[in-house]
Amino acid sequence: MISGFEVYALLDPQDSNCRFIGRGRQGRAKESSRERRGSGSQKGLWLAELSLFGLRPRVEILEECSTKEESWEWEMFWIQLIGRKDLGEGPLLNQSSKRNPLPSGGG
Image 1 (cartoon, rainbow, N blue to C red):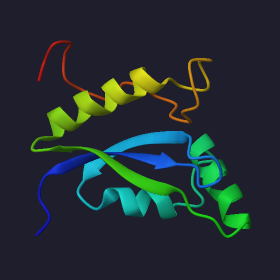
Image 2: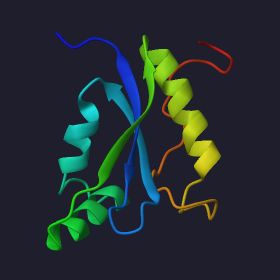
Image 3: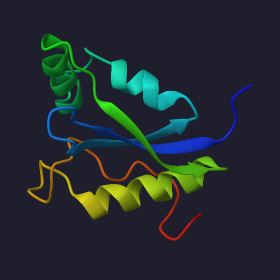
């Protein structure tokens, strides 16, 4: 049984730039890197483009966490540190930097 959570980065295999930060139960990173279609998200479009060239993103585990709340905090930290493309802050294709349902300061 898999327990614990992880925060991961999806890196572009062409230039090694970080394109997406995600979090989930251990093992989620590999599933996320194989996603090709979906809601038409920027991440999904990028993965589909890589797929056309027979490429997949490289997965790097950034943090191993014992709770979901801790994983949310680290995910937000990394998104803020690297920056979102849609906000002109960096290369990340994440479209939401805060999915934590906890009140500010909660953890």
